[in-house]
Length: 85
Image 1 (spheres, rainbow, N blue to C red):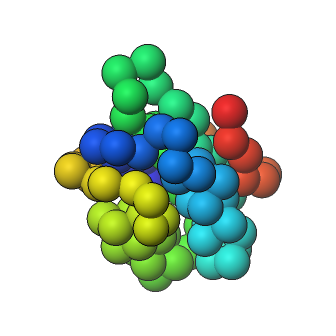
Image 2: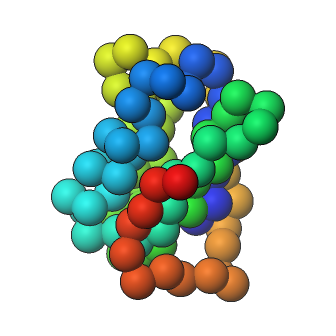
């Protein structure tokens, strides 16, 4: 699943906490800051666990202010680990 999260999501540990959540759920992928202030996320793994991460993204960490989460299916890239960049 490829998601873009908009709002106050940079400088609030959004990527690091997304990585923690993803690893707890056994997912691989990445969370990267985008130039426009949003965060780009790729989550790969068991569909049920990906869905749980997508639900978590709607709120994110306590310090974040999530305005919008848009997600699309992704079947092209399946990384071996979860990383932030």
